[in-house]
Length: 392
Image 1 (tube, helix red, strand yellow):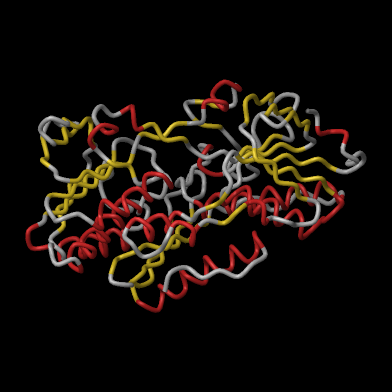
Image 2 (tube, helix red, strand yellow):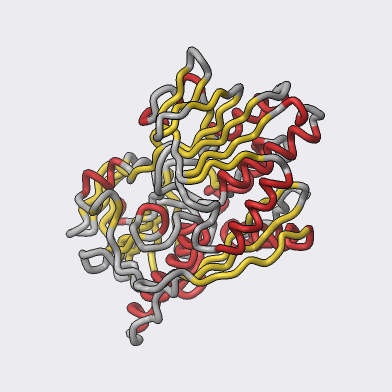
């Protein structure tokens, strides 16, 4: 099926691949600014959107899966059409995309497909570990934690880069909280294995606060180490220095890679899509990429994808209106970090090409947990046009 003959002739055609933070913010802004002046096609292979923090809420029994899923069918912005389909080919020079629901030719093409996970790249992880970065993985762990009698829990990252750098630290702290509330912490051990020198390298203050929380809660932190493999027979994690960690429950962050369709397209350079860090444009005019799929110089996190999408939307609006070029992406992102016990910290960091990251930490505090909840509420209201509240 070719969808270019649907009555959109004369309007700017924008095709957005991927409906995460980047795709949702981009299409919402284009609709707000231009409405029916553009024909926006939003393509994603899944039915619904889930915040990363909501996965942890389900994993530790705070929310039910149905309470955190937001269906793309509810996206009804003027000028925007959602197409649930798998992207099977990307022809960047001609801005043409083939999907399982037809082909689309764009005036502006935006790739926001994120990073794919590869649990099979780490021997033993599929057989004896649990990944918690996907909806399926995190949701499956809900029952596992509900029945967990205590023991040795290892949170292990297998390689870099990985999405949401604070997430492994959050997971370790929330494991500790869950075990304490279940009354089994005294007979348990919690270890975090991270291939970074500090929990959040761009923010020394955030790293110091997390290290203090680890020390207070007797969480062992192994910095500069990654998990090379698991031995299912012995229930042992083998680290990259050859040392071993026994576990009763292993929570893994799998290897990340660019989606295969992006790799086949020729867009990827050194593993990820290279873009101008200010305009987010690739080497092909009219072809942009935002979020985790890029090597834009910022962490792979939703808030950075959202900011990049805003910059691309401003560029598209300026193009259609014949205005001078938009200001571009400033490299700023604000992340909410769970410290457990209903306390949240806010890390605000700015990344600029050629400069060291600059940022600060606020909290952690119970008041900032309310700020984080409002962040989620406002995004769902903007993107899906309905009210929603994260878990209390």
